[in-house]
Image (cartoon, rainbow, N blue to C red; front, side):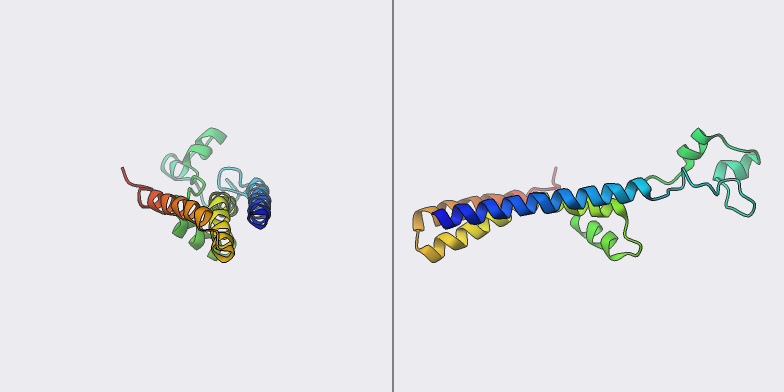
Length: 147
């Protein structure tokens, strides 16, 4: 039982710490990454103009540029996060999303590791409890995204 407790606590600690580190790194990258709303090239000779500037032909205010700018990426699936991490340069918010995903997976990994420890130790009672928890978590994944 003591081995399972130590293993679970280490997985939860290091998984949480790594998750926080990924989120901080991603937010730091997003904070420093230029986007189209703050880019200093607006209005520069030869620079692309916002759609409303082309239509009207006049200079746009900062608010109008912000409204016309492309929004930051929003990731709604693991596949989207993986695809964004595979691109170069890596989208900083994809790093944040990977930290969030790791934070969500950490407790599941802890339960699986404890289940293995209980099975190896021959403790059927606690292995059964861990198996029920794993089953409940897997069943809940079936309902993710369904309405």
